[in-house]
Image (tube, rainbow, N blue to C red; front, side, top):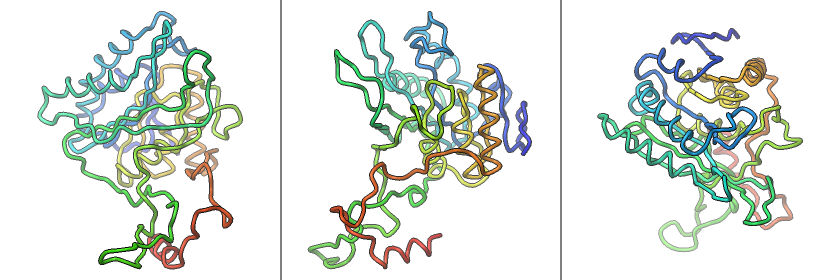
Length: 305
């Protein structure tokens, strides 16, 4: 698979080593079906200027918004994954800032951004705090530009806790009460973060797991549509896009992370990418309280494949 440095519509993968605003300015109007990213939190990480602060974070988003909106197709989606800015012992929820900036700035356009979901990503491990409760979640804001053109819930259903449960009253009494393909994953996603011995770990200090963009890509796009990550870091969104047979466009300003992104996305194209399968953290067995999958459900799942 060839990786291009300059965007063309026919490219399968375009990776730009530089400021994302320069890349965005060279993308035609309404080219992108879905943007998934996690921007810098301006907290003094290795890839940030030590002088960056919460005002830097705000300015970054004010500067790129018009271009981000312009390149997004009507009916397309923007998914922004953020956590908290912590300084002087004060915690600032960054999703509040993003919501205000994106919704207010989009009001001047014909198709204002609509917040479709505020997804909570929860994980079991992280830094331990001594003067407050330890943080174990971040958020993903899913905006659509007008009415979303695509949502495939069946592609991202998760195992039901009680797949054999039956309705106990009403017209469906005695029938299975759940969907054979699984349940809606809800707006709380329990997915391990990329730390220590995680199979996806690189030198990047703030990776998010492939499972997050993979779910969003499967639910919000169709085959061969274009996925953008303006702050791609080590290329996680690109890995997910290639696995799901989408086109990918990403920008990364740090040369060392850009090189890692090339390696990981190339591995994804070759079928050798190291990823953790998107599966429940706790898998029930026959001795647990979780019911076994009925044969009828298993058949429906096979037919769906």
